[in-house]
Image (cartoon, rainbow, N blue to C red):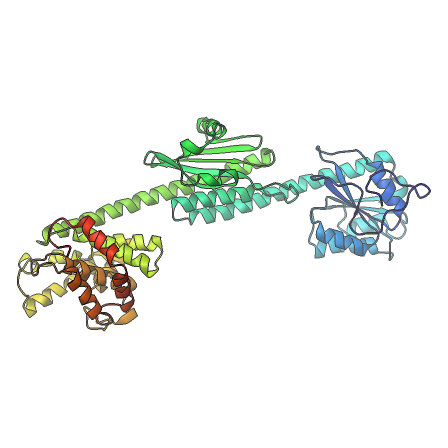
Length: 526
């Protein structure tokens, strides 16, 4: 049929094409109305009767089906159909009623409004049909004057809009619950900011029929006096890891200033929205985005609820980080105390930590795990706090009894830390216990062999010996680099994990560079 919503009469124009996708008007964000009838005149007259009308600023797109089967095809493709004007008798006497069951039960679509229209009321009596079938209105074709047709369609659209809004809000709340679970699991500030931005964009794309482009937005945090863009999308993607104050346009700064002045830190106007939150630890957080459509009051309610959860997530992150920083400080102080008690020179604890992080990354551990190992390695000699100075700082060889006493330091240190609930301190306890084990099983205290030794213990076993050999100790002078690396080649697969030795030998310059940065006294560079 011609692509027009003009009335079509048999004696003036050709009939509408019998195609399941036949439409009389197309509008980007219009209400979708499906006319299902086996008479072409009904399609033409119906489209003409409500031509030029709009509801809530949106026009109509008409879809035409001439049988129940054609209607099924259209409805499968267009799940957002608003109204179905449905004839009862078509290819069979109950085609329309069977389509109702298909819509409600097979498609599980309870949102679309179904108006049953019949020219043969005796085939489907209203009293029976309205009870037995999930329809929303029943009309005889002879009673549908222009005014009554408008009332019927607008009433159906009003009901559809109300139900769709409730469904959108339900979906929005579900997304907020899922988003809250997701963002609380983020373990770095970058990941948290990226997760919040991602979930926010997902939340704003609730309506499948909006046809919106992907929104642009950015998330930034001001930590230690510097605000950085940690996550961004759309036109702001280029600003990631840059200073927020330098890259943010004036509009962004103005909008965020509005959010900062609001009681709950949330501001929206038209298509833009901004959020500001200051955590309990003093860290400032900013979020700004631009949607492709204006935000309504329903969006505002959902966003306020979403940001309330986001504020909790940020607070949780910064408080958790503060606890971790406190733990790190305590662990380093304990380790430094042990280093000061020993007569050995140099920053042994810090060098071992740096070596361990580098070796872990080269081995393939994640950055997060390597950083944890770096910290957990620092108290690896904690148990020596219970060893007498006469043994700990003895310049000559130890007697068998003294060596037996020295070996007890692994149990002493392990027992001091093992009951802590902190994952870092738990890792430190296991490192203390296993870093003197050997790949060939001849180490102590348990005689573990090969990969039965945790990778943390194997890594610290390598870097602890590496640092001990390359620096002066009370019982020996520092070895030359050639001597150090020759020893590791000799002990590959015996004392040490062969893969870790290979990494050390292949990256010797990087390990030597760490030695140079942290070496205070003793050692050599030959």
